[in-house]
Amino acid sequence: MQLYKSVVMIYCVFFSIDSVAQSEAIHSVISNDPEYVTASKTTTSHRPDTEVVVETELISEINPQSQQQNTAEKPSAVTPSEKALSPEFVAVPIVFSTETLSTTFGAAGVLKHAGQPQAVALGIGLYSANDSWLSYAGFYHYQLPELDQWLFSAELFRGHYEQGIYYLPNSDLYEPKANDISRVISVGDEGFSKLTMEYVLPIARGKHGAANALGKNTTPISWNPLESGVSSISLTPFSKYRELEALAYLADEARGVELAFNWDNRDAKLNSTEGGQTNLTITKGFSVDDDPSWLMWEFEQSAFMSFGSNSWFEQQVLGINFYLADTPSWEQDYKQQQFQQPPSFAGVSLGGFDRLRGYSSKQFTGRSAVNYALEYRVTPQWQPLQSLPVFNLYNIPWWQWVLFAEAGNVADEFTLTELHDDMKTNYGAGIRFEVEGIVIRTDFVTGGDESQFWVMVNQAF
Image (cartoon, rainbow, N blue to C red; front, side, top):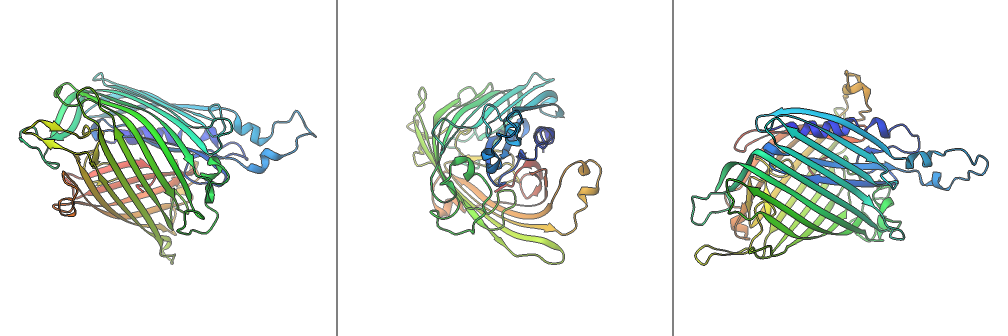
């Protein structure tokens, strides 16, 4: 239960608020869906004991009417919208300690309106007493002239771990299976780079451009993508690597491209009560050195149903999530020494802060996976947080109590029988609350190899 990732997240979140909450015309937050917004999201995830997780949606809310105001009477005046365009930088020191990394020092910095109103730049650097280090840089949601339906983002991560913890197929088996794994501690280097080019379809909420499409839904939810939600297609070339000193024979590089189709039909991203989200991602891995090419796809569907309010709860919501993945190119012929599959760090996996949360990050890897999640989310009428020390410095409109259960499995065959044989289950409870437009998620989960405690930004789905 390594918690230093939560320190990174909470520092980045809380110390970036003051620099973006001072203008009446703009309320930049780490959020999901205020009206008339532009957004940026980055997700960086690695194994749990040496994991830095950045899952941040940095939003700038812009009043479109302010951009059309006539300023002829006071040509020298600075309008609120012009103030909103000014770059705003905030940096925060980070200090934490874990059994794996020992004492670690570093800093995180965020630049809002980094060259464009909707653009955001984020950087993190850390160095530990045992000579481990990592760095992360991201530049999100830039637009090119005359390309109103497009958004461009780039990310770069590099890390070195002196005592990295990895879950790998059991090397004692001649033909290792998906759930036969060993916990390995090794010196490790890993990283990735990616460029995302997202095209928002000019239908439904996307017909007024990509920036406005990321805003809050103000129309009734329907299950027709031509009338409701935001539909987008994204193309993401990527390069990933992982080099382990103790297991130098493993594949250590993956290059390819991801093609994703997404339909976000939720009424709100921070706290969904109806609608849902559909996502299909197809990943083509290229041949690297002697390692063959590979193909993987992932499908995810969420849905939400509201049960209204009562004297105890302001809101009751049932959330359902279904995840299914497969690697059609999968081949494991140990007799002929023929393999066609992605490296374990780039392929299908379960375990971590979003799926099968009772297990460590990427603990299970293989050809295919299925995961079911059910969450019962309630917002109490009683809200004491606003009066507590420290909490009273921020706007906390709601908090949420959550009960959830999950069942999932990874298999080396894509069949219903294999996927549902000996499924892993876990159960948990959590408290989530919005702070200045940010959802802070804390989940305590049991049912796995050991209990896990996750601190994260944003809902699990």
